[in-house]
Length: 292
Image (cartoon, rainbow, N blue to C red; front, side):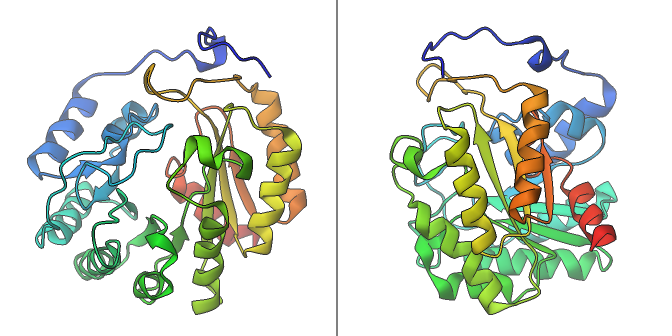
């Protein structure tokens, strides 16, 4: 795979960023609620489209992280104490936006004894109390592999319990030096052990330097861990200080990766250059309900 740090973006990754009143109104609304979104903090390429559609992925527990993954735009820094009012603000925002499907994620909070699990659980409860018909998907950190923390979240019966692998095993020391490949698999496995009918989901990026055989191995490992759904997207480097893009994967290759993932035993897969773990999450969930 190419090693250049300055690969030109191919045509399929060039987008005209939308703007206008809908996008600006959503941006101001989220700001007025004093909420963080992974859309903004992680510099997601889909945030403009999502904002125009009136959707967002809420990020609880602050906007700084205790880890410093070399692919992620969320910055490490001064950590604030958990905000007891945050679950209510998230719930109110979901109601005001008229959402039927909500995705809730967080920064990694290794400084907290439970990794933030209780805040996830509280947010699910408050969101559902104010929005009885809502579907809730959570995308959690690894909680340092603490099964009791995973149990706290799974006990609230989120419609989807997600934890991202992000990349293949060989690249963990480079991309996720504070994470452990097997521990991330165990997060998904533990969720299934606690609640057999819990839908689980993960996500990986491609274009960091992985090989096809390594990707296939990751698919197999996810299936063995009981993972139901997977998102596969193109890695885009947030800055010159982050990991460089080693390869831009073609749309046809993404289609092929989806076929391989399904053949491996994953029940539903979203795969494409702009796919992210929370992008079109509702569609992936509902397509799984129809198919199975």
